[in-house]
Length: 573
Image (cartoon, rainbow, N blue to C red):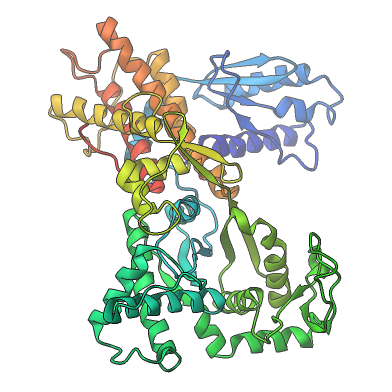
């Protein structure tokens, strides 16, 4: 149920009927008819641009076409209370009371399904977080984690099949440094050997915790020779690190469906296999690259190397697949991983990348096109940086886990609800400041509190009236007329399916917290009116069914929206 799409379809059907009667002419392409909200200074409920689109085809001014349409709109749509011409020819439409009461009944009947769109269902793979398995997640991972999880929730809300995936980069130089770090901490614990300060190692105390767990497991008996035990120590250390990461994500309310390990792709020869396939297609070749931008010419040595022709797909340059020592580059592993994803027959692949990977998108989209013969879409969403502030100053917390602020620190400070809601309160492609003071205060300036408080207030009304909020209220021709404040709230409720549709089609979940805050603002403003005028009170001598149904509809939308965001809706605050 989408008011805007429904009336776009109904009006187009009427126009075709009028054309068949030779009343108007319709252009061959008329699908651009839009049903929108009118400007805020106008009281109409929806606005239609049909007259503007028909004017040229009918060789008339838009306002003349509008006059014709007004006559037929009011005749054919009994639910229209009025149709007025605005500006150069827009049609401003207001619905009657019966329509809105029926709409309320439909919202309540749909309940948890209100807002979902009847579109073709697809199979999605959303890869997000995918941090190196070398320690706890930090704030830099948080925004992308919440973005990926919320996108998955939106797709699921609309009935799609979604796999939330984590790609574990457990192959390469960073893993060697990590395992070495654990090894030297073990020696420090069992042999009192000083932790080296002259080596490239991870310094965080979490390495000590992992080292203690390795010792405790007794899976390795002899630590005298790192080379002999490296593979086993690596497997154990990565497993323990991934447990830390999964616990961090659990604190955020995030659970991945699938974990794909890069080491398994290499072990199973997937990198070699995909490169062979791309060689056959002439997308992989041996060649030389020019000096990269920003490199010192004297330090750069041109050499023959294995390259992928990503420049054929719009990338700046072709990309190397092997390092100077013959090992695979990070990109080569990613090629194998995306080949693996393509083989699992997803309709759409989505990667959530950190700000430091913004320049990586062209090459990975290129290789996906090359492997799938342009049959699989890969969408990359870059999550920009978050800056933490408290009392106007950059905020620094405990750094026990290393030289960064962890997700665990953040959630312990402000809670998972505030973290998730605020991380989504800006478009992912812009940086934003996370102000600890604002997200912990109980005021309108704290959007997550303001939305949750609206839900709690509605619950308090139903408790006071001893009516079950979850009961299926239904309005049966009640004489009570919705006032203008209530109609404004209803108009906002009617926007919810449109908000979901845009969030889905544009992959912009930040639209949801914006919308919920606006709905909560309308509700709280109406609540405040009741403090000075008993006519607007929700609790009075009469148990007004229409007004209760309106409150229930608001609660349904807030509940659905907050569930998608992964944020709780407390019944009391």
